[in-house]
Image (cartoon, rainbow, N blue to C red; front, side, top):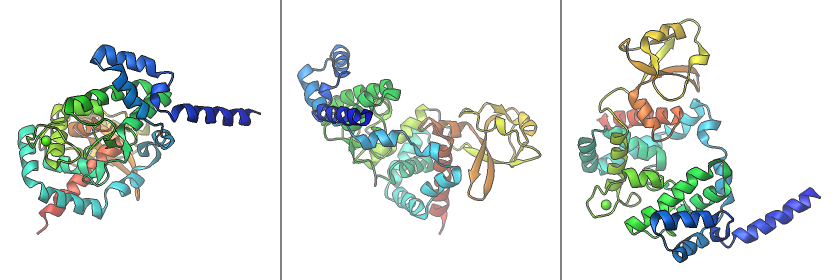
Length: 325
Ligand SMILES: [Ca+2]
């Protein structure tokens, strides 16, 4: 009986939402906010949201992010590949001038800019195939755990498209509404995207120069320290205090406390510096690392230590390959 009821309800739901999100029960409140706070026209909003479609594949994808499912060893194999290293070298050579200018203007090491674009989209090769409006409307209206966040991003997206003169029904991105070569969500686009090639528009989909400048600006604004260490290797000495490993993302542990945690830095670190002690399951065993300030800055892009480690290691592999004769 319940199963039949569920089938009937799902048929009803899909027939209602097939007409788009302008008929969703939560739509009127969203419309009122957009009119009140951003001066949108009701008819225009209804036209746009009426075209937005629910995508069940998005609801499936959001529930199982790779960072929560994989060990470091598994995660690393996805991102640190010969193809991605070679792609980074090619991207660097093709965009040498833009990277040099961005590094100088924003004080950000070029290898981290290249690695971010490599990890996010394989240097622009995979920028996402969902319409951004479908992704954000699906998550804003049909994913209650994060409806407030994605409702805010949908709001920012519509304002952004209007400001930049983009057609909101055409722009493509990831299942979570991340856009362009560096996968900026709309609030990040509005805060950090720059027109770095000077054509009057921040086009992070088609202009590599704009994408490079935008990623560099993001890192600048989140406090990147050019030339500083990102992460250092540590060794286990005695019994490691596993309950003190991976304590969030901020470097809050004093180097002078490390012996008490069973760790010893492999290089020289000032005793008064604060680090993030990491214990990662690599392919051939447990690894210990100490995240520095720049490691934390990378997590401002994606709040995952595995992500920051992948970006850093890819950046170093690309640098090494670039320097080979
Ligand atoms: Ca531009």
